[in-house]
Length: 630
Image (cartoon, rainbow, N blue to C red):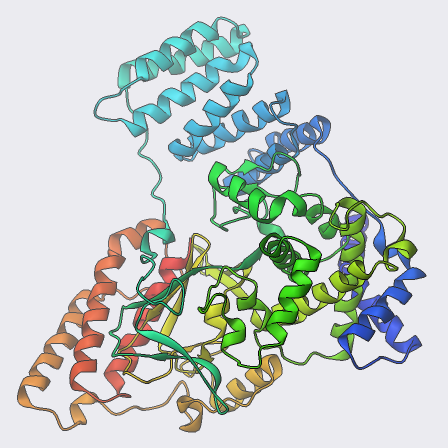
């Protein structure tokens, strides 16, 4: 059995590479054309005789499949970590037909885990859902006991509604078999007497730290008036400060134009906002995504998921990955914006006819990150031949899935040969390919740190405004991600006229210059000439103290007070192995405020760079990183 499982796993890993393997076969058998359009046409011809890649493997909601998953989770309750159990019950929920007995069972079983783990608010929601759908009479008493526990935890002072829950539990316990009735009635009696439960689990919400969206910039939507977009031959399109910016200032807050979760997160995170959830709700039509609540489910449906719903599972089973999912979402949002394929074709012609590098990313005279123009004109980097062919094959395959499963082309088209006689189909295939290439350059891979210090990949996001910021190995802003939004927060004072720099790779405090430059050249095809690289900053660099500068007595005294404040308040240091409870004890908001205050004091009196400002800046960055973690 172990050998069989190992073989199946190995075959599964090979199957994920099938598009790349087929791409290698194509390159060996054909001369590769130079243009994107001709490579897509070559992929169309190749797939004509390799249609095994185009098999549509669709999974529908099924009570039998749902119950199989739910029962498997229940059998492993004593073996699996509670997070794994919640994930399995959520998967069972996703497979359950709407308002079915299986759905009620998934909600009920998940509520038991949530209640045991002191996640009472989520348990209360699941109990309510199970009761609303209709849970078997002989099991309802257990739900009401959980409901009573959750109410006690929620209203410990007033205990509002507890007696009603216990009364219902007592009533329905009479429907149980003798053994379960005895256990349940004992639990009811215990709650009647004690009216207490273990305290709710401490939860961490990175979104609590998400700053408000700045207003007042008439040229850049969702950005502060402290920044502007500029263009030069030396720096290309870039972002600059229009006035002095203080550390801690929010420069922008943008919702990602498109995003996609990594496969391992589809039953633990919201498909639309990417928030980690204990009790997500399923899509009402497909089995492949879940949402944090009704608002995200409805918003996603209106923006893209009404069509994507028919495709995302088929794509996943055809071993199309995050890049193709993002490319599809961008296509669907662009079609909604422009109204039709012809409208989208005309929009692209309009963008391409504008030779002004800044004006072509604008819509209606401003940079609007919710519009297609903000994405379409982003920079694209060259890609190697095999990746190019792999993308072309996937673009053609995805176009076939779209044609076979949706009405985007006016009707469903199942015949591959007939499909690519259609000019619209060729246009869409080429556009998907273009989206993949642009996405490869401009998709930020989001990782967060879990409770044992591991970096966990979560999603890929496309945030056009952030992609317009140039790179530095000594960044001056932090890209903070929470609740499906990306905020740029200044982590040091920035002078008027200076560029806003993000980090696209390793920073000087972690990696020496030669290796940093090599990594950036491999990934982004450029030679980094930032200040840190020009001056060969590395992890062991010795920077001069600000106190060595020509400062007044008052300035030195103020700086020494700030250093003393840091020493007193920023201890113990944050680490990669912090539980929620440890984060709560540290009072991170207060610590972050202290660090920001110290940075602004240093910025007022001292020239950059200096030892103190650099040290405090990277301590602040560490704090933001911890805040983003679970």
